[in-house]
Length: 307
Image (cartoon, rainbow, N blue to C red; front, side, top):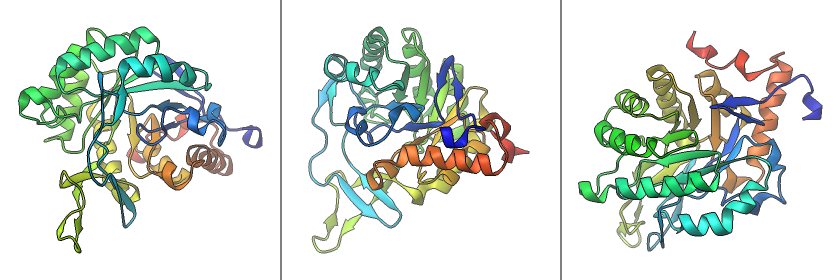
């Protein structure tokens, strides 16, 4: 950014050089080209595409989005075209955007995750973001991200075939977050991203029924940011691998909190629905703060709040 010539926003993450610390979060930015005419995507650290499963799926019925005070609830149900369709029809355009490509993948079995990872790595994505919040159908529908042993099992299997940096996206529903972080690191994760949406509920008092067909839905937005920040702090303290922080980031100041807590980079999600230029704006706000405070690089402040 020419106006902040004394500020270096680059982030070196797992052998990749990111243009900046802000990555568009999965499920909130399409696959990227939708925003190419709105903001300069080369300023971003990367784009995490719409969450994929090996085979496409239609998603959930009924209400899918519902606003709450300082937040947004969603019950999309991982609607997506499937890995093969993504590789053929979406990935080429993503690669042309001038930023790193993050493929976000979830699976309902270990085997689905492994096959999907093999295909995505062969197709040349830059990062593989493994979403372990998917329900494991072989374990009665309990998400892989609840119990550390289940998470370690799927990460270990994926690690054997993953040839790009493997970022594991953690669920806030984990039984014990520090134990989960350590188990995933031991199983071979190169980095962590957290946290995913928080399980929540809303009631339509006129219908006298839950708003969502599945009763519970995922809550995101600024309402969850202090909790997400606490979890990122815990994760950074539990592992030696990079942590990407996300959860309710709306401004550069919000992002700086996560970086000062030790996050290597951040992801911005719900803010994209409020402001389609949010990712670039937040990047610029980070640069402006750094310039005003005489901070040349993010390394000077990363983790500084930890003492």
